[in-house]
Length: 161
Image (cartoon, rainbow, N blue to C red):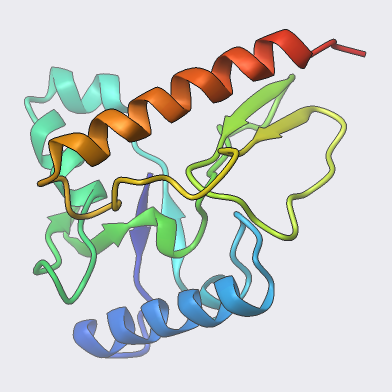
């Protein structure tokens, strides 16, 4: 998914507002599903990655999905400026939201939703590797190992109801 910006502000102002509200939402609500940025007009654009690949635009999609202002300039996708959809939802759900869904989170939240058809799984602790800086091979290896151990612990303890 990508995030489209509020239309009532210039692009840079809209991106700043979305990021500021994201930070506030994370501190106050601590949920993988944002409220404040969405209320301000930031919203998802669901993109079919298979279609993007067929159109020769998969690399563009991946790059656009990773854009975090002000670190990177906002790219165009279908004639509109976009950024990382994590600014409006850190666990976007497939559309339509049908059936059971396993949601793997990259961090812990104080308020993880309780939903009959969704299972949220978070890391046991903060991940060593930063989400933007991938320069430390050791941190990446440590994060991988932590994920492997957490995954095994999940498998060992999980019993579907």
